[in-house]
Image 1: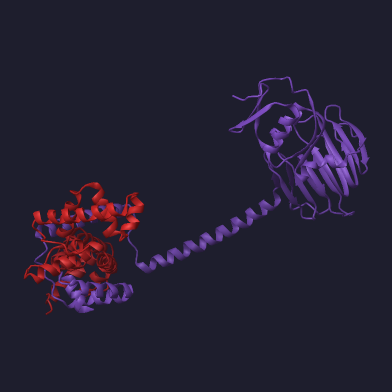
Image 2 (image 1 turned 180 degrees about the horizontal axis):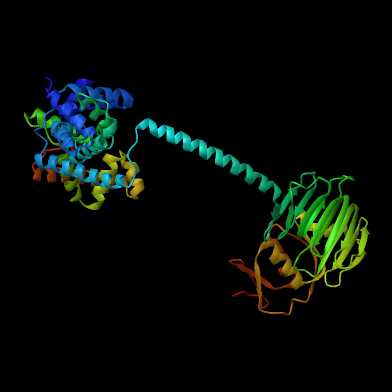
Length: 196
Length: 334
């Protein structure tokens, strides 16, 4: 389905914007602001990142108002202005180790019949909070193991510990992490972490 | 791709699908990726229910805030121009800059050529200079050679000199090679010689190895022709010249072979020589050795070798610390 905009009013908005009316910019924001926000959020997964893009796009639109060539609709132009930041956020997100955890978790919840998809921002926050409550050494080992994808042996070398200690601390840490996450009852388990 | 991307946007990917999406996203160029994202923006229904109204409002406020800032900084500027006008102005400015810089650089270049070329060495430094006519000069430490590239080699080959240098002057009978130094003038006819004319020393010396030179004391106008294996010494004070026959030719330009040769030289002078070469300072607790003489050859490449030679010859202890050399007569330093 296509959202039909009142074309004549957008035309008027554009010509007023080109003449330097901030009112017209508000009009454009009313027309596209939330949609752009929502669309960006779908890629960035973080509200702040999405908001930054929206802000930049509208400021750019204002700065370049006099050179706008589109007469009927700004939809395509807004995308051009958001494009690079969107692509960067998208690439970054899909390659993030935490995002992998997140997906495994949502998959799990979906299998359990959970209808409402999980929010990534909440997930990361809870994960960080829970991780933070662990002893420093365990935090460090989990970080090296999961985010930097080091082997136990490499971690042992880097921290001058025995491999067995690393193994023990890692499993202790993950167990504790699981407990933490249970407590906040946001997640029942994190497959990725538990699967170690 | 569209399907996977759609699931990504709705947070409904499975792990397998994420793996696939990751592979594709990483394989696509920005251009290709942007196309699929554009599709969604242009045609999909986007659920805006997740956008909190107050957050959207504060975004709008921030936009206005930033715009206000921008407008303020714009006020000081001239009215914005049509974009193509900018090109014209930029082109005009560039042409002007180009023209001015060409003239300027040309002028600079001429001036530079008229200026003196100066080669100088600091403490412990050496330099080899080849002049436009092929004459080679090895500069010892703390010396300076200068000449004017524009006039050098026209009628005469004129250089100014201070310090110590070993000259190998290219043969050219029609253009005499002239050296000006403090208190003396040297006229050369294709030859090899060592010239020591330091501003801070009471005598200047020239030792000829090959060919012939004419040596003039500026003060008195006294002039001598120097023959090979002769040394001429100028007393700066009186302006008098003394010519000596040399038996030990190789002493003279020993520095050029990275050696110093001393024959019955007081230790204090030996120390001064070492200080000059390495830029160090000697500190001693006793004057008792300083007038004793030293005879021998020392390398000028490694101070440790020199210090060892001194230790063995004078039976004292030497220690080096932070550019200072301590001599202790007690046989034990610090």
